[in-house]
Length: 117
Length: 113
Image 1 (tube, each protein chain N blue to C red):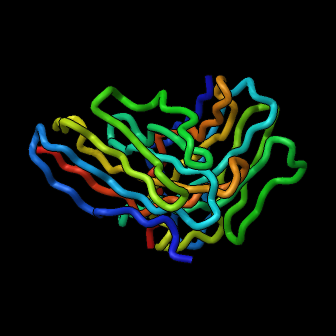
Image 2 (cartoon, rainbow over the protein chains, first blue to last red):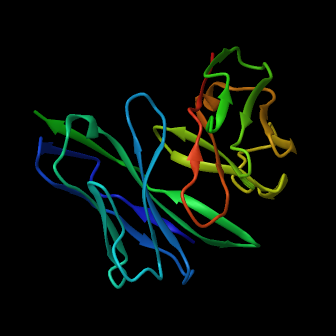
């Protein structure tokens, strides 16, 4: 069974500093994908970044980068130069085969990031 | 591109009533997902469709929940009868393939009193 673990319920970061949000995962599927989503207080889910299990390089999207350590089964999100608008819930998710012809996107419990001016 | 459109945005209903949530996926997206978000359980996959066919409904909590996708541009999630424990935010998401990021709708906040 798939499992996504986010161990930090809440994080604080000073504006303009970098922050790392932790995510570990477990799956028996050799071909999986890892995602990060942002959920601001308005409630919508915003896709940030994707990493495939066979990708050799860490994914980057603007100020977001994914620190993918396959052997450790971790996929941490790094936000550089934090902005006040980065304050939100952040969810790590994994797409993997779950059996019976089904692929599921499983979410972690989330980390609430607060950016301090 | 209008994105994934869900309606209504908010729904308040009395226990025992039927509730229907609606979703219009992005045109050309072959996959459609229904998720439920609560404080206690986080984001849970309820059901997903591929080319209008239900593929996995193992997350549907019980027989009171049903979902349909009569065509490529419309899906419904129905709860009958509704109960207070069904109160949650229900998200619909769609994707062109299963490989990459899914686009979520704005969600429907359901309150059952």
